[in-house]
Length: 152
Image (cartoon, rainbow, N blue to C red):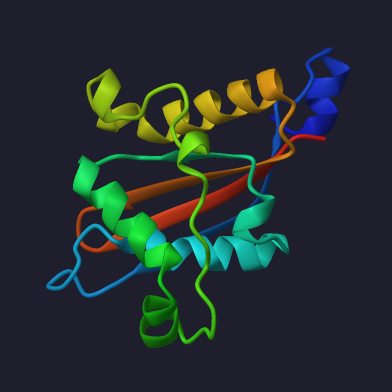
């Protein structure tokens, strides 16, 4: 539903999509590391850095996948060799990631991943009065997704 229709119906938007990015990589290497490639694109498109992100929801295919992506985001070597950047994207504060429990803790509902990540993040951003949030997800075949959302 568009914003005008929502407001006409007396509904306040929970948030807005500020940017998004898809990335893909050769699945013979790091199959589920797509978010490490998508996050910098989404942040660039939003005009933000990792330091601007107040909360983050990362889909957990499994725990090592999350740790691998976080390590890549914090790595200058990864930034230089894989992303063509001179500095690391940045390591988000672990206390701000999946603060309501991630996919593994709620049974990995893959069919509901996108909706669950978005609603969980927007609800918690409202509760904590956070302006910017980041969602990431990996998918089989070396794909990754990142989306920056904001509250106004």
